[in-house]
Image 1 (cartoon, helix red, strand yellow):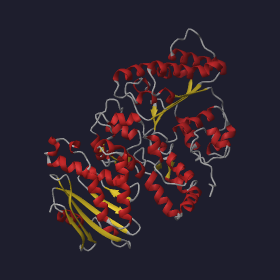
Image 2 (cartoon, rainbow, N blue to C red; image 1 turned 90 degrees about the horizontal axis):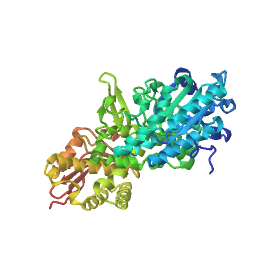
Image 3 (cartoon, rainbow, N blue to C red; image 1 turned 135 degrees about the vertical axis):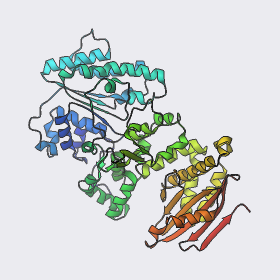
Image 4 (cartoon, rainbow, N blue to C red; image 1 turned 45 degrees about the vertical axis):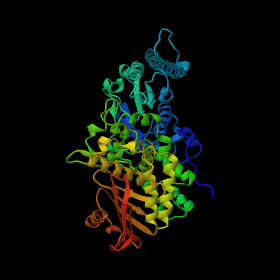
Length: 540
């Protein structure tokens, strides 16, 4: 069945979206507020989060294209529709370039506008040419200029651990960006987007009138799809999606929330969904993992290799002040700032008394993607091995056969190389426990691609809940301890009680791993009342 709606899944051009009647969520009242109150603005958001569409919308607005905004909120607010010279630089074209290549591409971007406003041949550097361009545009039109820099940090992100190249690229861009500070009298509005902050780049070290709106409540929903927008203007899209996949509208909302929601960008943020994933889901009629596939860059993986990668899952639920994550990335002691600013972590909650934030993986899509990314690196098993494990465990769980799922997991663990953890760490009980808790965390996070799984943070816990339409499995892992202790903890902590009355079969399972065997050596599975269903002891 074809879609009723046309979704802009491969288009970020505002004019094209409007002229072709594609789905557009109207945020133009926020845009009007923004340009009315600020002159220099910086907004950080993850990749594929609508920054380029926002830039193109601002371009059309300052270009005076009033007809594109007919019927939108801004049409009732804006009375003048003045036309300004707009210089719109998309800096992503400069990534993965040598310094010489980046300089050439930057000069080509400037040349695009010099074809209209001319060039003084005495202007030799990108900064000098940019400065001259601003002056000539102002003289020719009698208007101040508007400057849009989209993805300003793209040329730099991959160079975080290449200090020589990072400094050379920074110097090239500093001379260009310095113009924004010097030529303020000729500038009507500056809008800069990116993912990260860089402390020594002139934008942040010298442009002291730049307003960073990235963590301001009022603009938390400027990019992305808010819960309110999904409940109102996009409700027909949700209803169509629900019809396509054969579930109720309420069930579709629950599925979408778990898969794509969870982004928060300020203390009292809107609840924000990943827009690319959400619209791609509507378009393809499948709730797949779209954002992580499109948003994960090689530069992130390279960056993570500079830190103990086994610590990454520990950041799910970590409590920090803003000075520990909303900071420049290049000198950070942990990967948390880049993970947050890139969208792999988001604000889960804010405590106004202690002024601390709890960061979390925002949703199922990101959690599963991180597990899939980390497992081959950390456990030295191929992606084919991992996929085989997930299929085997999922099939067994859907059949209600938890014992078979654990047999699959036991066979997988047996194939993990012994040198995956150093002898020094292995000799420490804490090191052994952390390794297997991490293993459980990654396996069951990745299993979430096929089965409904809730796995708690590695920090101090190893409990897992697996749900199907007919079953709820509540599991507890112990290292060098007994299944009796594991099952007792499930009962003492009332892990299973919330499902006792929902009509599904509740099963409890204690799992014991023995460090000298380096594998699961015992599990005991009971029903909700504690009656033993299966007891397998591999020590004997």
